[in-house]
Length: 161
Image (cartoon, rainbow, N blue to C red; front, side, top):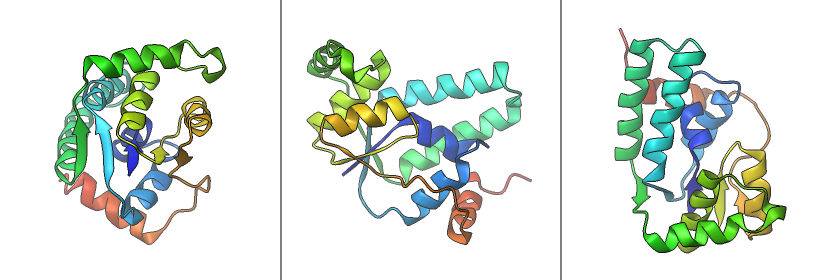
């Protein structure tokens, strides 16, 4: 099972340097995708930051929110955040070598509890921590564009006309 991090979701929903890579990966991914309810809050926070500070229009933000709902309905399993996951995240935060932020520790706690073997993320620090905890990266480091990725982008973004 692959744990889906917010960094990949936001790249799927909005134009970013690594959007093509995210779209390619998503189009080719055949494994079950899992995340936590924290993904909802974190994704909407990222979209708000992009609107306030990076020129994302109100219409584009609304479209991205709708695309996000379609993404969740397409089969991303969301796990509830139980108190034990918060405690597990706190334990991860006590390991200075992991260098985690609170939200990333919470994501990894859910991933570990759910026995995910891979992490889909563009966050280098989180990927390093996940690797030290026994998880493999789900995305390759290449940034090649593919026709499948572009087709999936059109599918996810829908007809906005």
